[in-house]
Image (cartoon, rainbow, N blue to C red; front, side):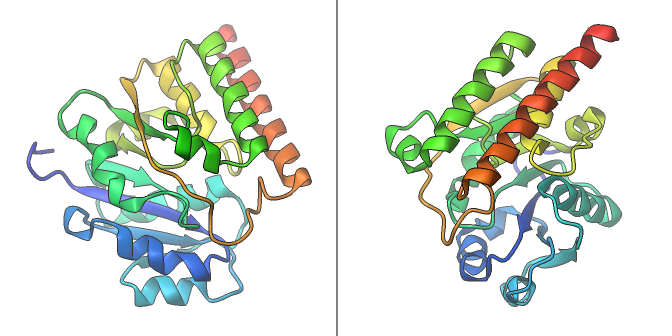
Length: 237
Protein backbone atom coordinates (compact mmCIF):
# COMPACT_ATOMS: atom_id res chain seq x y z
CA UNK A 1 0.00 0.00 0.00
CA UNK A 2 1.28 3.44 -0.88
CA UNK A 3 0.56 6.37 1.40
CA UNK A 4 -0.97 8.47 -1.37
CA UNK A 5 -3.09 5.90 -3.21
CA UNK A 6 -3.99 2.66 -1.44
CA UNK A 7 -6.36 0.23 -3.12
CA UNK A 8 -9.62 0.58 -1.20
CA UNK A 9 -12.66 -1.59 -1.91
CA UNK A 10 -16.12 -1.49 -0.35
CA UNK A 11 -18.54 -4.31 0.48
CA UNK A 12 -22.23 -3.46 0.98
CA UNK A 13 -24.57 -6.28 2.06
CA UNK A 14 -28.10 -5.55 0.82
CA UNK A 15 -31.49 -7.15 1.38
CA UNK A 16 -34.49 -5.41 -0.18
CA UNK A 17 -32.95 -1.93 -0.17
CA UNK A 18 -34.14 -0.70 -3.58
CA UNK A 19 -35.16 2.70 -2.21
CA UNK A 20 -31.84 3.33 -0.48
CA UNK A 21 -29.03 1.62 -2.35
CA UNK A 22 -28.83 4.19 -5.14
CA UNK A 23 -28.34 7.01 -2.62
CA UNK A 24 -25.65 5.03 -0.82
CA UNK A 25 -23.71 4.43 -4.01
CA UNK A 26 -24.07 8.03 -5.19
CA UNK A 27 -22.67 9.33 -1.88
CA UNK A 28 -19.55 7.16 -1.90
CA UNK A 29 -16.31 8.99 -2.79
CA UNK A 30 -15.90 6.89 -5.93
CA UNK A 31 -12.67 8.58 -6.99
CA UNK A 32 -10.95 7.06 -3.94
CA UNK A 33 -12.27 3.53 -4.52
CA UNK A 34 -11.27 0.63 -6.71
CA UNK A 35 -14.27 -1.74 -6.48
CA UNK A 36 -17.68 -1.31 -4.88
CA UNK A 37 -19.36 -4.66 -4.27
CA UNK A 38 -23.07 -4.85 -3.47
CA UNK A 39 -24.00 -8.30 -2.21
CA UNK A 40 -27.62 -9.06 -3.00
CA UNK A 41 -28.64 -11.23 -0.06
CA UNK A 42 -31.85 -12.63 -1.53
CA UNK A 43 -33.67 -9.40 -2.41
CA UNK A 44 -37.04 -9.57 -4.15
CA UNK A 45 -37.51 -5.86 -4.88
CA UNK A 46 -34.95 -5.26 -7.62
CA UNK A 47 -32.14 -4.03 -5.36
CA UNK A 48 -29.54 -5.73 -7.57
CA UNK A 49 -30.79 -3.95 -10.71
CA UNK A 50 -30.61 -0.53 -9.06
CA UNK A 51 -27.10 -1.25 -7.72
CA UNK A 52 -25.90 -2.44 -11.10
CA UNK A 53 -27.35 0.60 -12.84
CA UNK A 54 -25.50 2.81 -10.35
CA UNK A 55 -22.19 1.24 -11.31
CA UNK A 56 -21.67 -1.30 -8.51
CA UNK A 57 -20.44 -4.84 -8.99
CA UNK A 58 -23.26 -7.11 -7.83
CA UNK A 59 -22.63 -10.46 -6.18
CA UNK A 60 -25.54 -12.76 -5.36
CA UNK A 61 -25.65 -14.62 -2.05
CA UNK A 62 -29.15 -16.12 -1.77
CA UNK A 63 -28.52 -17.63 1.67
CA UNK A 64 -29.73 -15.01 4.11
CA UNK A 65 -27.31 -13.67 6.70
CA UNK A 66 -25.26 -10.50 7.12
CA UNK A 67 -22.05 -12.44 7.68
CA UNK A 68 -22.68 -14.68 4.67
CA UNK A 69 -23.15 -11.60 2.52
CA UNK A 70 -19.90 -10.08 3.77
CA UNK A 71 -18.02 -13.30 3.16
CA UNK A 72 -19.42 -13.53 -0.37
CA UNK A 73 -18.27 -10.01 -1.09
CA UNK A 74 -14.81 -10.73 0.27
CA UNK A 75 -14.55 -13.89 -1.83
CA UNK A 76 -15.29 -11.84 -4.96
CA UNK A 77 -12.62 -9.28 -4.04
CA UNK A 78 -10.13 -12.06 -3.42
CA UNK A 79 -10.92 -13.46 -6.86
CA UNK A 80 -10.34 -10.06 -8.47
CA UNK A 81 -7.17 -9.40 -6.48
CA UNK A 82 -7.32 -8.23 -2.87
CA UNK A 83 -7.25 -4.52 -2.01
CA UNK A 84 -5.04 -2.93 0.61
CA UNK A 85 -8.07 -1.88 2.64
CA UNK A 86 -11.65 -3.12 2.64
CA UNK A 87 -14.54 -1.13 4.07
CA UNK A 88 -18.06 -2.19 4.99
CA UNK A 89 -21.23 -0.16 5.32
CA UNK A 90 -24.97 -0.75 5.32
CA UNK A 91 -27.23 -0.40 2.29
CA UNK A 92 -30.04 1.46 4.07
CA UNK A 93 -28.55 5.00 3.89
CA UNK A 94 -28.24 5.29 7.66
CA UNK A 95 -24.47 5.66 7.39
CA UNK A 96 -22.94 8.68 5.65
CA UNK A 97 -20.83 7.13 2.85
CA UNK A 98 -19.06 10.42 2.17
CA UNK A 99 -17.28 9.99 5.53
CA UNK A 100 -15.42 6.90 4.29
CA UNK A 101 -12.14 8.79 4.02
CA UNK A 102 -12.26 9.46 7.77
CA UNK A 103 -12.35 5.72 8.44
CA UNK A 104 -9.59 4.87 6.00
CA UNK A 105 -7.23 7.71 7.03
CA UNK A 106 -5.84 6.09 10.24
CA UNK A 107 -4.97 2.96 8.24
CA UNK A 108 -3.37 4.87 5.37
CA UNK A 109 -1.36 6.88 7.92
CA UNK A 110 -0.31 3.62 9.64
CA UNK A 111 -1.93 4.59 12.94
CA UNK A 112 -4.35 1.63 12.94
CA UNK A 113 -5.14 -1.63 11.20
CA UNK A 114 -8.88 -1.54 11.91
CA UNK A 115 -11.20 1.43 12.30
CA UNK A 116 -14.84 1.37 13.39
CA UNK A 117 -17.15 4.30 12.83
CA UNK A 118 -18.81 4.91 16.18
CA UNK A 119 -22.34 6.28 16.25
CA UNK A 120 -22.14 6.66 20.01
CA UNK A 121 -19.57 9.46 20.06
CA UNK A 122 -21.86 12.17 18.68
CA UNK A 123 -25.10 12.98 20.51
CA UNK A 124 -27.04 13.52 17.29
CA UNK A 125 -25.88 10.19 15.85
CA UNK A 126 -26.62 8.38 19.10
CA UNK A 127 -30.15 9.79 19.16
CA UNK A 128 -30.79 8.46 15.63
CA UNK A 129 -30.36 4.89 16.87
CA UNK A 130 -33.45 3.06 18.07
CA UNK A 131 -33.52 2.63 21.88
CA UNK A 132 -32.96 -1.12 21.64
CA UNK A 133 -29.95 -0.54 19.41
CA UNK A 134 -28.44 1.96 21.85
CA UNK A 135 -28.89 -0.48 24.72
CA UNK A 136 -27.45 -3.39 22.77
CA UNK A 137 -24.42 -1.40 21.70
CA UNK A 138 -23.69 -0.25 25.24
CA UNK A 139 -23.94 -3.79 26.58
CA UNK A 140 -21.77 -5.28 23.84
CA UNK A 141 -19.19 -2.52 24.24
CA UNK A 142 -19.06 -3.17 27.98
CA UNK A 143 -18.45 -6.87 27.36
CA UNK A 144 -15.76 -6.11 24.78
CA UNK A 145 -13.97 -3.99 27.36
CA UNK A 146 -14.39 -6.44 30.25
CA UNK A 147 -13.75 -9.71 28.40
CA UNK A 148 -11.34 -8.60 25.67
CA UNK A 149 -9.80 -5.35 26.88
CA UNK A 150 -10.99 -3.53 23.77
CA UNK A 151 -11.88 0.13 24.22
CA UNK A 152 -14.97 0.04 22.02
CA UNK A 153 -18.14 2.12 22.15
CA UNK A 154 -20.08 0.70 19.21
CA UNK A 155 -20.54 -2.30 16.93
CA UNK A 156 -21.09 0.04 14.00
CA UNK A 157 -21.25 -1.65 10.58
CA UNK A 158 -19.42 1.30 8.95
CA UNK A 159 -15.81 0.17 9.32
CA UNK A 160 -12.52 -0.29 7.49
CA UNK A 161 -9.77 -2.83 7.97
CA UNK A 162 -6.48 -3.71 6.34
CA UNK A 163 -7.03 -6.72 4.06
CA UNK A 164 -4.11 -8.69 5.50
CA UNK A 165 -5.43 -8.08 9.02
CA UNK A 166 -8.92 -9.28 8.14
CA UNK A 167 -7.59 -12.38 6.40
CA UNK A 168 -5.65 -13.32 9.53
CA UNK A 169 -8.74 -13.04 11.76
CA UNK A 170 -10.46 -16.05 10.19
CA UNK A 171 -13.98 -14.59 10.17
CA UNK A 172 -16.77 -17.17 10.17
CA UNK A 173 -20.01 -15.81 11.59
CA UNK A 174 -22.85 -16.08 9.04
CA UNK A 175 -25.28 -13.54 10.44
CA UNK A 176 -25.81 -11.06 13.30
CA UNK A 177 -22.54 -11.83 15.08
CA UNK A 178 -20.28 -10.67 12.23
CA UNK A 179 -19.43 -7.19 13.52
CA UNK A 180 -18.76 -8.15 17.13
CA UNK A 181 -16.83 -11.25 16.02
CA UNK A 182 -14.48 -9.00 14.05
CA UNK A 183 -13.88 -6.77 17.05
CA UNK A 184 -13.41 -9.66 19.46
CA UNK A 185 -11.00 -11.48 17.16
CA UNK A 186 -9.11 -8.25 16.53
CA UNK A 187 -8.70 -7.71 20.26
CA UNK A 188 -7.44 -11.26 20.77
CA UNK A 189 -4.93 -10.79 17.94
CA UNK A 190 -3.63 -7.46 19.28
CA UNK A 191 -4.77 -5.56 16.21
CA UNK A 192 -4.26 -1.79 16.34
CA UNK A 193 -7.83 -0.60 16.76
CA UNK A 194 -9.34 2.87 16.61
CA UNK A 195 -12.78 4.41 16.52
CA UNK A 196 -13.79 7.60 14.77
CA UNK A 197 -17.01 9.51 15.33
CA UNK A 198 -19.38 9.20 12.38
CA UNK A 199 -22.70 10.71 11.43
CA UNK A 200 -25.82 8.57 11.49
CA UNK A 201 -29.47 9.03 10.53
CA UNK A 202 -32.66 6.97 10.62
CA UNK A 203 -32.56 4.39 7.86
CA UNK A 204 -34.78 4.38 4.78
CA UNK A 205 -37.45 1.76 5.39
CA UNK A 206 -37.82 -0.57 8.33
CA UNK A 207 -34.90 -2.44 9.84
CA UNK A 208 -35.00 -6.23 9.45
CA UNK A 209 -33.26 -6.55 12.82
CA UNK A 210 -33.80 -3.70 15.26
CA UNK A 211 -37.09 -2.69 13.68
CA UNK A 212 -38.93 -5.55 15.40
CA UNK A 213 -38.84 -6.90 18.93
CA UNK A 214 -38.17 -10.44 17.73
CA UNK A 215 -35.37 -9.29 15.43
CA UNK A 216 -33.74 -7.28 18.20
CA UNK A 217 -33.95 -10.24 20.58
CA UNK A 218 -32.39 -12.63 18.06
CA UNK A 219 -29.59 -10.22 17.22
CA UNK A 220 -28.88 -9.48 20.88
CA UNK A 221 -28.78 -13.15 21.79
CA UNK A 222 -26.43 -13.92 18.91
CA UNK A 223 -24.07 -11.10 19.83
CA UNK A 224 -23.89 -12.22 23.47
CA UNK A 225 -23.42 -15.85 22.43
CA UNK A 226 -20.63 -14.88 20.01
CA UNK A 227 -18.75 -12.94 22.68
CA UNK A 228 -19.10 -15.75 25.22
CA UNK A 229 -18.08 -18.45 22.74
CA UNK A 230 -14.97 -16.66 21.54
CA UNK A 231 -13.99 -15.75 25.10
CA UNK A 232 -14.31 -19.37 26.25
CA UNK A 233 -12.34 -20.59 23.26
CA UNK A 234 -9.60 -18.06 23.99
CA UNK A 235 -9.29 -19.23 27.59
CA UNK A 236 -8.88 -22.84 26.47
CA UNK A 237 -6.19 -22.06 23.91
